[in-house]
Image (cartoon, rainbow over all chains, first blue to last red; front, top):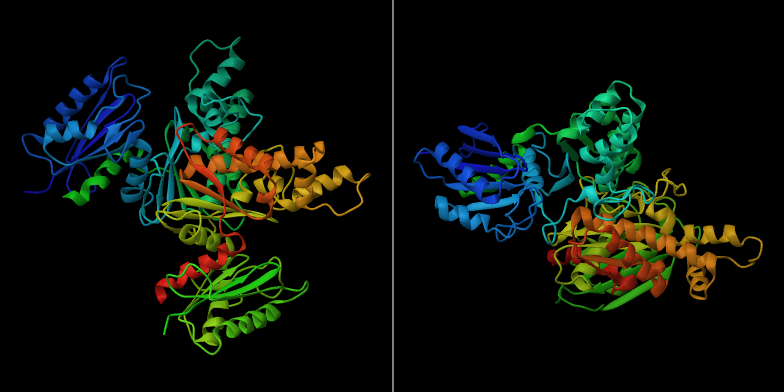
Length: 303
Length: 303
């Protein structure tokens, strides 16, 4: 009988379970549900276990990889913080799932699992060094260096969203001025446009609205979108100067903002990096599945 | 007979040769000379070979490590560029020294060798990750990650001096505005002060003058020194957010600017890094010898 690898992705709004075998490039099966607003950790855990059991259909998994949408302690497999879903703090998620399924479990945050997924199964295949960056409600990243995940000394590496690029920029939730996240994330760009349009706009403005209005030639939306792209590009150029990776892989909703955005990101990044420092900036290939494939990559050698 | 390790440091103004044995923490002998202004690559090579032979006194070295004050191609052991001494471009320094001494030679740039020196013999002993930063005529750095040098995909990692921290700052030699080096390096701070003091100051102003006048309470010098310290601190905080190393080790002339400077660097760095990201910023322990010890570290396993 084949080894079975089970992957879970606990996202902020989506829960996904998927099953595969070592060496495979596709899923034997997948279950994905939206987590209802106001759901707590208990609800999400129940749902995931149920979806996992359904996929396994009575069989036992060889190993389980888990992507979690927030900071986790990789060493102990414990959730540190959960911004989106209440009740996860200090949950020993790894121990809980090991007891439930009787198989070894590895857990990491979604930026790291997405980086690993793109490196092992996506656009980063064959590269020795890359940074994966998600540009969504937040801006965060994960590093592959020397072909392996670099988590940092205390698992905190990849916080490109809180690198500072403009000391006279607006104040971020973290307290600093001009963070990449404060300028480039979807909700911040949307809030910025909302504040400009307050008198003349009725509907809700999202990050997607900013990109759509910019594409239609709206001056305010264009200015805000391009400033966000510039900030992210400077952050990427600074990261290139510091670490000199081969590749930057960008995923998340804001990366669907069109050519205007991509060109501005690339221009600012290459202007910021020294001319001798070469790199590509490319879209993620695996989309929503990147963290799941990374979860598989974490445990496929257990098989 | 003991294995003999020979180390060379081709600096911008100083040439140093030193001899030690594997496992030793001190030199069997050292020769250091100032390279006369206008000297070329040929002169420096002759001088170094002569100093090496004098130290060896007829014996053969087991291996030779070389620190070079500029970009080198680590893989081929070739000098890429030399800003300070003419004639070094594309010199196959490794092959030349291997032919001369009949021993294996390894070459790297001085930021990497200093990082390795501090990691293996200095203040970074026992640490798994650190960034060494030299703050001198230029601002550059070298990384130790997972206990080993991280040179970057094409050997260009560590360029913290050309990370951008202020888009409305002055223009750097590299063409960008607000680079760390443009604000924090000795010559740039000196030029800034010179331009302010032009009417009332007779003597030459150096980076050291800036620190001395700032310590005496001169307002202009203080403002320029603190702005440089702030820029370096933001660069360090950004690097901490991206990579989460344990330690930043600072060497070079500007780091002798006193408590005012150190406090401002540390404050800006910790304000820029997320509160969960912890690190220390400490002075280099080996001073001018850091690159030499790093050169030894590169080759001691050849012995």
